[in-house]
Length: 284
Image (spheres, rainbow, N blue to C red):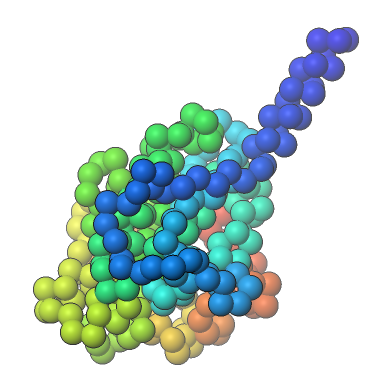
């Protein structure tokens, strides 16, 4: 009886500890590059963070060993991070799917396009290195992003530097994909590449042009009436994936505009959560 009680208490302790978020600095010994921003982090309004100089990951470990892990890159036009509905608010839902969920607080580019990508690569590197501690299957680590965070997620998916930093899958909410002036999000483009990008820079960060057969599978969702980031961003990325034989799932909802994330006010929240749950269980 005593053994049973101790075993039960140990099990409950493990479950509770697994639910506690863990925050870790991304570059404890200093980042290898700089965006030339100085000063301290600023919260422009609740859950809208700018001037990130000390990037972090916040990990919500699954209670189940060998779980999938998803690293979320919040949006904000590469000038701030919307850390609530495009970040921490999603943790309980993913935890209910037995997924280790990670929110990446990444540095803004400030015209230094290598900076966000290096943070995303470091985040996936850390998750794989700590896989046993955080109950993660290192072969099932995905990247997710919303809006400009979707650009960062798709950049990692198409620009990863090694097998160690290649995501196993990607999930994109109403993503910025292209730098093509005809249908990009200009604020994100300017913040990423500056006011006078070269043709080479524009091509390099137009991620629909970077897809190949090694690009990881994708789940893409957007609204047809999005006036901020034209739906053609996600649609053309989907078509590029299909042309290259990459498994892809595209979900276009008729209304909702831009930036709905995990908000209950989005009319199709039940649809996207259900479709994503099914995709995570059956398509990977």
